[in-house]
Amino acid sequence: MSDAVIIAIIVGCLLIAGLIYAIYLADPPLIKIPSIALKPTVKEKTDPELVEEFQINPSKKVRMYVSLKDNTTIEELEKQGIKVIQKGKYVNYCVVEGDYETLQKLVNNDKVVKVLKDGKVRAINFKILGRVELKQDLGWNLRAIKADIAHENGYLGDGAVVAVLDTGVNYKLPELASNYLGGYDCAYDDPDPMDVDGHGTACASIIVGNGTEYKGVAPHAKFYAVKVLNDQGWGNLSDVVEGLEWCLDQINHGKRIDVISMSFGADTGAPEVKQLLDILYSKGVILVGASGNEGKKVSLYPAAYDSVISVGAVDSLGNVAEFSNGGAYVSAPGVQVPVLDTNGRIYYGSGTSFACPHVSGVLLLVRAEKNITPAQAFDLLSKSTDEINDPDDKVLYGEINAVKAINAALNANLSENRNWYDYLKDPVVQILVGLTLLVAFFKLKLWREGS
Ligand SMILES: [Ca+2]
Ligand SMILES: [Ca+2]
Image (cartoon, rainbow, N blue to C red; front, top):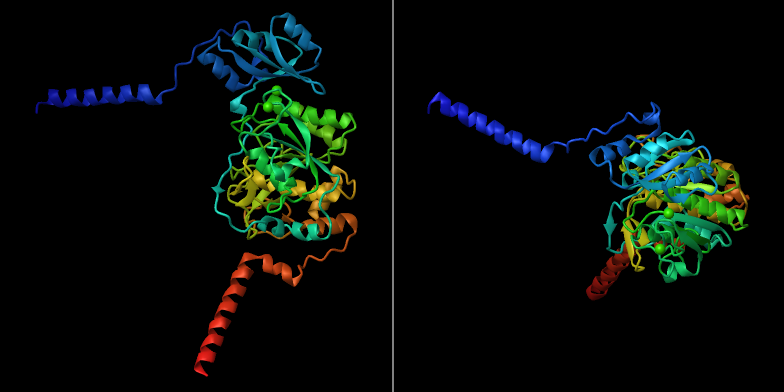
């Protein structure tokens, strides 16, 4: 082969490789959008992801979340022809739909504080990490946190109310129907928070499930279903804000909400979410959130806010789950936890999403008896845990213990020890007892045959 042929082959290969790179690997070319009309503050006011999206297509209609100094600005924005699709009641924000030109108008308005993309990029979701259909030990999670002992002593959560902010709930299931107080669908803006995804039904079942076979932590407590995540299990930031405003609305109309349970999270927060949580906290609502499933050092928002009790996940042996994020205040069962799906079937799911409702449930057991403040709830939890195996220091205190919480909050004197016959409910004990009886039977048979 001559040198010329070899060079030609090499050049040919390089060209093909370049072409493959261009087609499969390179990002789409960014359109340079004119920025002359924008004030220098534009960068501080906008989300880089939003600008990137417009660089690809400036005329694309995008849902934008707009933080405002004052809600009176909304009228001004509408006069400029901006389409406002949602606005705050207790906090200053609105949601608009528009293109790059709309964004320019927004950032040039002095009363606009920040413009974020209000869509899937800001997804607030938790995947259900594991789903095991096989029926294992039903109720191990309740025994792990000693909720079964609380139940036997008459602590069932009567009168207490939780708002479950999630994908909605199938409130028609017989295990949930009797405890359902109503709710709202912020994701689709209708009064019916029916669950399609299943995540919210699973979380609600852990808190207030009250069936003959399946029981939650506070089976006599009532619940609101506030649908802030859509049928695919993710949500808009604005719908979370809307859901918190809905809860505040209930309180302001004299309705009772003891606990808000939030098994969702995002990497960043929004000032309006923090504001609303602070208002709810000041009105006596206990806020509980999941720490997140990324195995990171810090919790996701809203769990990361000071007003929220962040909950990490432990397995049945008290080991902190690898996926569980740090920055958690306490932990609870979150690995292979029995939950209900939207058809009422029991399956075993994992995630901090399922740990969070256990803490919500225990706080309902306490709040049913005594009106402790959110600050007192933090203090109470610090004294109501069992030791866990937490080599990476992800959880400040240990695993929640319902008996300790009831004893500490109510000066009760429940024993953490079970009656001997309670141990028979444990499948491991059942197998051991069964084997012993079997061996004894055959020994007896052999002895009788021998004699
Ligand atoms: Ca909405
Ligand atoms: Ca609906």
